[in-house]
Length: 577
Image (cartoon, rainbow, N blue to C red; front, top):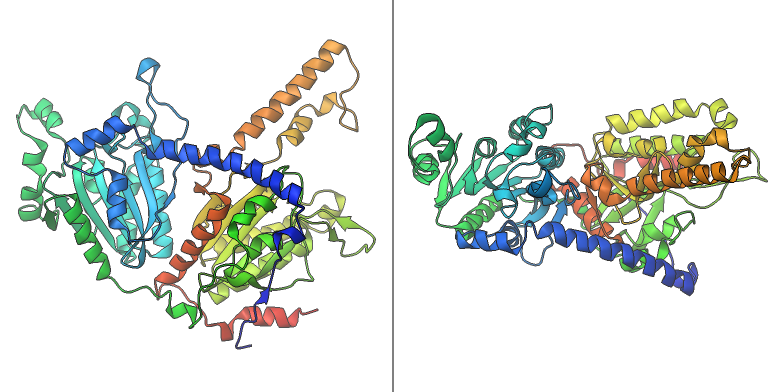
């Protein structure tokens, strides 16, 4: 029991995917990934080169330039919330404007070998103003940092609310005011917060850094409740914002800031120095002397594994083999609830629990001559993942949910077996778990199955989508059949009528299917904050590894058992078949 005996999983690509199929799959995936990369570049460009030049003319760095100086060399910035507000326009007529990324950059950044959450105004978009959903994007990042107890770094360059749209960002329970509550909760829970003000810091933007443990200002920065223009209009005083709220005032008189630096670069160096003074990461401690190994099979092969047709199945275990260290996995309860795969692996040298949907046909527990489709939750699978999830929570093991689910089983048998009750048990488990959970929507995320497998409403620390994710209650064709059911026979064919009426029904069904398919686009889900980030297939391991490491980085805020006393050993022993 003292050792976790992880076993090899997976095989070479050519052993389970025909070369022609692999080529077709890769070509389809590459088209989707190229489109995603183009959209990322569009967001990262902000309002374009003209606004980059404006920032540089003021002697400042752009937000992305600041991040590059802040991060550890040879490490990657991992953005989240990239596509918030993507495709939306605000205003009317020729005055319509877009706000790429809601005018904010939120990202996981390694600083002095510690993961941090960086929350930074994009100073190429309306001088870093807050738009609709900007507060929610900031709050989501703060919430993740609170769950993981990782330091938060605010890079403030904010002209306040984008006033033409203030009614959609100022009021409400998650409006701008909730940012400051999250500041307070982070502080109350001992999460380090460091803020640097690089330019404008007006009204709400001025309040955001104040609760931080350290507040830095550059010589160009100012923090004010109201800017000079508003004061001039309200009090007829001809002053500048720098005069009333610059570093001279706040570092030396008001004490609202702690330190000053001559420019962006010097302040970023000071922040790195501050982070180096924080407690060291406990990641190595929780590796128990083990190493970090790459998967035995290339992660880039994932784009060849997933079929170009979403209705086709694939081998989920081969996906796991391309995500976990050394392609080693200890499958727990393999003979029960075969529609679900549960087990333990290492990612980044750290233990994780994995719960995934099996896509293949599976045996029926009572009728040996029958097969049932995978990707659906049945009674045995629900019980299996409920117990596995609870045990991981008790043992302090982070859980990765790999979703590709069509929903719960339906019909007379499902109702007789009490799937509603079993499903409620799973929902309760995931609602009350405290261990970090990471959800990856590999492909389908449908109906109540999406909820049950730790969809975003059940508070995973991060939810990722891929270019082929389809998040919806049901597929477009199924919904179209339901919407036009009275016009269809038992085989779902249109009941014979006039040619004109038949064509009208056919077109109506196609319109419904097309609309639902558009709504399932993963970038659209990310724009509405229904998912945190859309990643390329080969990026899944990179993001998941970072999340697992962050789950172990801070010591003492949650119980993490050593592997000798895991309850999972007992679960495996008592149910071994």
